Amino acid sequence: MTRSLSFATFLLVGFQTVQAAYFTPTPRQAPDASGPQASGSAWEGYSEIPDLDGANRYMTWPLSRNATIPLYQTADLDNSTVTRAVIGVSGALRDCWQGWTDLNNALDTAAAAKSSVKPSKISVMSPCFFNTLDVDAGAVVEDQLVFNGTTWSSGHSNVLPDSISDFSAYDVLDELIAFYMDKDTFPNLEKLVIGGHSMGAQAVQRYAALRKSTKNDDRLRFWVANPGSLLWLVKDRPAEDDDCDGVDDYKYGLSAKFPAYATADFNDLGRDGIVERYFGRNVSYAWGLKDNGAGDKRCQAVTQGSTHLERGKNYVAMLEDMSNGSIPDAHTVDYVAGVSHQPSKMMNSTEGWTKVSLIISSFRIS
Image (cartoon, rainbow, N blue to C red; front, top):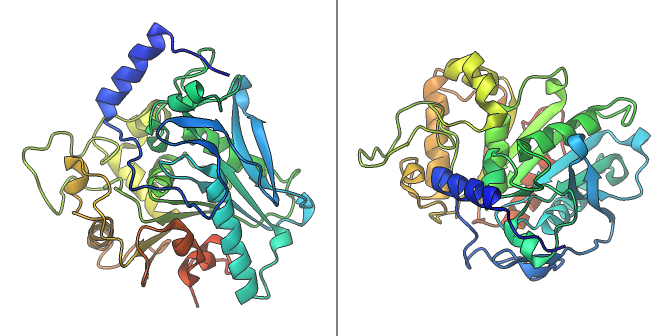
């Protein structure tokens, strides 16, 4: 379906672009040529997304308010026997098909290494967050949520369809989590991990901080791998830049300019309340020790460090400074040797598949 933007939507898209300054994928972010291929590209828009062996492709997964989203989910499972679930958030390429494939391959790696891993008991889901390029290219169908650029990753609201407003990717994740946490649907689910690499990791880390508390938080885990930037928790930065405006505004900090998803919550809890809640969440970070790319080059990101890895190490140092010399008890950190900005290798590393497949009930590797 091809749709042109209304003038009101055009104004909204333009405002969000100026306000948040999000980037589009660059040629260095090449899709995995060995994996499943969609028609089109991240830069010109996707016209069709592929079928996958082992997964159901849902083009219109139902959400509230008559919204839908495309996603992939492991096929042919008995929900009553599922004990683990993984929701993978793809990066700037929006290649949810590759995200599902990478996670499923990591699961196979885990099953080969540990007899206790039973793929028949683990459900993998990968939602697709389309943007306006995919409308023009043809992949988007009626009532699917569409976002401007990469604003979905920071929880900003959709721009299409016109009949639905203030629906963010974080609202989508809330509903997908609720789906898995429903005891009537998955009576034996023990743990659910939300994981992402690169821009997907940016989304997961910020979502972990902004998600409202629910009774199911004890069953929820977050995996954050090689994010291009992070939601910083204090006002100071390791590489201060007096000429850079908005360093501590969201999405880089906690001072102001929150998306609609989090505005009321922040007004109620403030910075200290958001940080306290975040420290209580089960978050596992992972960085490849060869990930020395700059990633996000905006000045707000550069104040966190010059590379993905440096920003990660600086972030861990900040956590230690805030927590009496050690990271919060519910958080863990892994550094993966020999890996750069490579989602498949991060997920298939021992550190990756251990966290993603939830071999153990805590995030610590024994």
